[in-house]
Length: 143
Image (cartoon, rainbow, N blue to C red):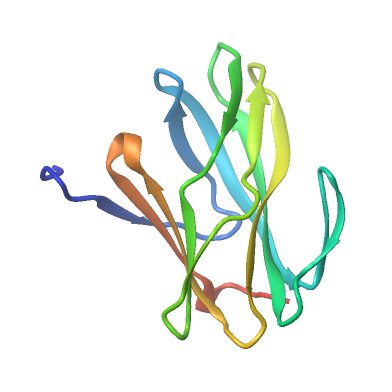
């Protein structure tokens, strides 16, 4: 049971599906399929290099509509990355999904972090349901 003002904390891992309810509890399965570090990325709006001294932390996310109704385009946001030096980074590009029943799509969640730091946690605050999801990045492989 949740206490007011407190968030339930759930651990998440790569390649392990997470079911969330969006748009009046329509079930959507999110899977963080892979993650990597890079100084370049091809965004929806075009190719980009990270700023000097920075690199991109990229997560590939697959979403699948498990419900009987269409989920209109929704931006999955509210993510932060905690680095080993205590810095906290917000996403610079969030995944957007519009899904028909049974449909799956992939998109990216992207952060730009200092090259000198190592990401240690991905945190997602699902404020609408007072849930906090945490992925320990020290246990996941980052290429």
